[in-house]
Image (cartoon, rainbow, N blue to C red; front, side, top):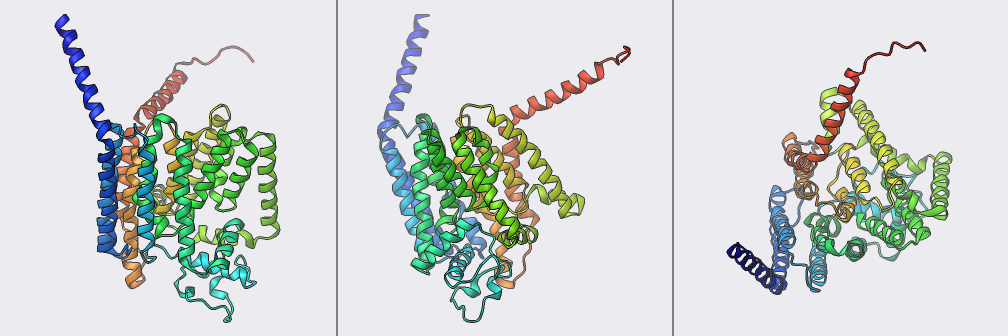
Length: 468
């Protein structure tokens, strides 16, 4: 018995010594990993030019992505975040990667040209909600006009987004300014998100800060999701600090930047207080009335929703089975509304901020809608990191596999043919759903058992013989 105790103490001391050595060397391991991630981006950029038209780009993207996965595993299981050096190194390499990507030419998306031109339209007295870029007068000239896609559609963006584009276009009508603003928002959102993470979960910041997809979609794809996410994180920080009115204003601002936040605002409703709730209600009701009285305000959005169908998963399966996209959208829309109602009801019963509920709603929204662009994942990650219960490896893996959605541009950019591949869809979503089901197996099994017990109870119930 004494020998067993000695062996146990010796093993415990050895484990403690190994952990101490890892902690003392952690800074060197982490620095090497940061350098490797930066180097992998340099290789990707030099060999592909970040051209969405190259299959090589999709393949070589997995060089930084696999490095990223290795870093997550290393930090999680070797606990390299135990010293004060952790967050500064995270920030330094996030900033270096963004600066590196900002030196590249815009190649992953042409949305930024619409941002610039819609801002310029406002400065020239044109209303982007009424006049499409295809119908601008001949006096309206710009070197970016021929680079816009779907120029027949009027602006699908909310008023605050249009205001942002106008201000930036007034300062400097150049993509670089827009890219700098979006990149700066990404860097600031990393800092703000770190403030929200609990002490034990501080290490999770690398999942957001060093994600290769987010760096490419912000620095080169030039999407303004980073601005929206920054405001959402500020709103959550305000709620955590009991500044309810400020949080309500920030949430309302995110809605006027992109409409999708209408689904997460109700989740935090009880935490906003009466004054905050009034702010939200007045803002939303005012906008709804404006849209009713002025339909062009949302006509571009409706045109986009009706015409655009890309990289969907569940709707694609349903449309293949039903041979009707409209019916598929109706089914998924109904499913989403039912689940959203249940999640909102449950969220109102909780005292803590329902980060996991918000992650569930956004994740479900992404999977059920007909269009799923890679940069949409930006909306989800802050919430899945703030969920202290687990790490969602399925979404992390999808943030790498979704790069295959760019495969459609190989034909589109060369011969102007838009054709999505079944193989590409399977490559993205099959691993994701398998990992997702495995991660949620306990909850799924309990739900199945609950349903079975209800059926058994129903069968065993004898019909009543009493008179009513």
